[in-house]
Image 1 (tube, each protein chain N blue to C red):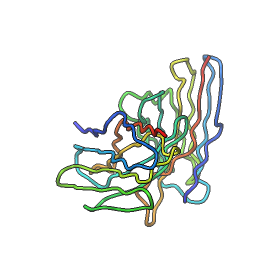
Image 2: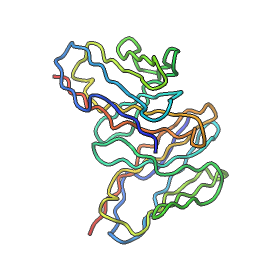
Image 3: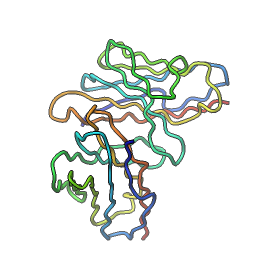
Length: 109
Length: 117
């Protein structure tokens, strides 16, 4: 089967750094996405990795290791508005997007 | 970035009625559109994939006669929930994908919250 694993919930402090991990087992690989979803809203695109390494976008960075089937999303200088669910999704060899269940990130002052 | 709209954003209907949800790509032509549903505190569940001018491909367990999808143009796809029942109450989200540099990225609409009484 195909599956995406990520922690259900994480808590971090405002101003700190948090890393959300994602491991995947899919039939083939054609890229990994991270989306942010605030409660009651649709997901918004954060990042896309298809090659190994780190992609940085402002306070957010995403890392990929294809050989390990592993990615992480790094959020720096956390703000209260970063409280949301973070969804990891992998595109398989059929270009189907396989979704993780999401990690709920709680930011405390 | 790419903009996808959905209409309506909220709908409340009586059991047994049909509800149509529209998904539009506003500033690009979407070769493929996706329909998802999401129950509270759960992840997205892909219902179907639709390509313009062809029949939608439904995921296993999704009733194609209940969830009718029409993708008549490159900018519009519709999902009709036929004979809706309370268990169909959910958050329905569409997304669209287009060509170019970010051709593999899906852009999501704002979602439609359906409540069936």
